[in-house]
Image 1: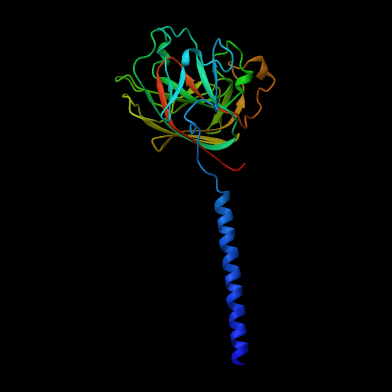
Image 2: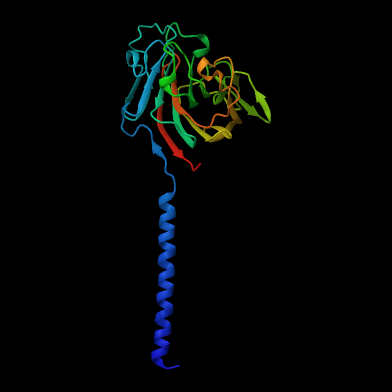
Length: 269
């Protein structure tokens, strides 16, 4: 083989190698670009992307500035209530529904419960998953049809685990058994003080849902369906149907609470 032919052969091999390397690199970049990313749901540092619904008031009425945002922290605040809660249970919904996702946030309870709040609502709040559309909620409806990842705090004396599950208008399955009880306790420990607590939730359509507290899995269940005493007439015809998606909301139940680092990672269907 002449020197010229050897050079052409080597040049051809180099070009082929360069082509394959470029294709592989571009494929890698495309795959990386497609990877889902965590999204901060409070990136605007205001309530523009959120919908408020408080019992007794129309959708969008943030009664007595219950929900507030400052410096990346969403607060449930009762300073304008004059110590009268009057069962005005409220929820604040992110503007669009989700189906498959991971949600993470930090929460802490502050100060004292408002004077006429229910005893069970002491240091009690929650993240509502697969919620009904806030526009369908009745004027005097206290809670949305949803699954609640219940957030609790201790009173310094008795055990009160957090990360429990409650099911207004729904049923779930745990270890292949249909659960119709309203609330099921998690394996979490009790947090008695006002420290920030980290929560992660994994939601897979109408399949598995998991709760994590400070990195530890404390609750797992599956197959959410419509049903139960909290159903309104709107949902009675859907009893037994699988729940595949819905809105995310945070609760106002009479005890001041703060949320921060609220982020979501949408997963492929």
